[in-house]
Image 1 (cartoon, helix red, strand yellow):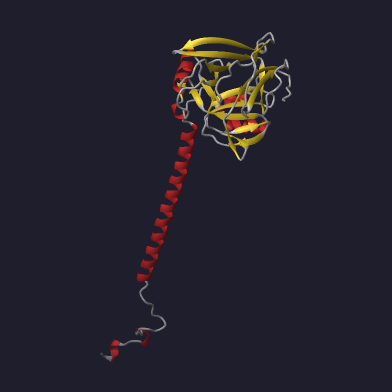
Image 2 (cartoon, rainbow, N blue to C red; image 1 turned 180 degrees about the vertical axis):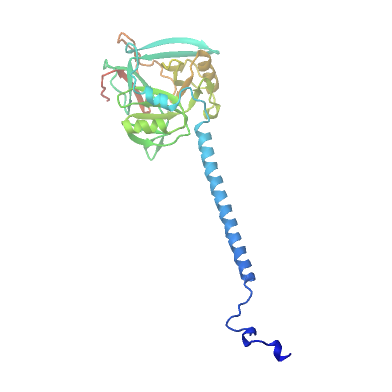
Length: 301
């Protein structure tokens, strides 16, 4: 090497000196790989979370909308402000539909309340008494099955049974078919009452998926027609739930909610003249629905 080739000592860079830096491309590459890895994991976790939420919402919507509605929940809540029209009383009739003999009791001018014991039906204000929801005995205590609210107090919770009866704090009653919780929450705010039972008919169609009771026994239900008028129906003879539902649909009922316990041998009711017929007999601890004239209170024994 010639001396002239070296013009300045500063032109010589000593490897390992203070100004030398190693190639950082390898480290950058490793960092990029780590970043991509965490981004991929984050995307996968976010996707799983979104799919889980969507699945939950989808199942919730499907669960709540499994049965058709003749009336939306908002309409039922609105109708709970209306008193039952007509002269106070029960109008009985018998008919045959699809080979099933039905005893039909049309309700008018009455209000409802829930009771733990049989009221004194010699009281002229008491017009009608029926059973309500199912129950079971646990540790010698009655435990209600399905959502059950009595005077604003929650006694049990379960929405599988899609049929319900809602009673406002002043006794106005409506039935409906829905697994939504909107009506029950409204009733709770009002200190009203509410129970769930199996749906038999929803918007004029059978609710086969609710039919957990098999065989033939006498059947009872609360039902309403297209005008929203409320009825209580009994079968005169043992029937399957399928046969009972078909008979109700053929007759013209659009919604029907099952009532537990079978028929009464001689069901108590008062007609529009206030005349009493039959008597109420029950040797089991059913929760009862007691119907009285608007404005009247009852005393239970």
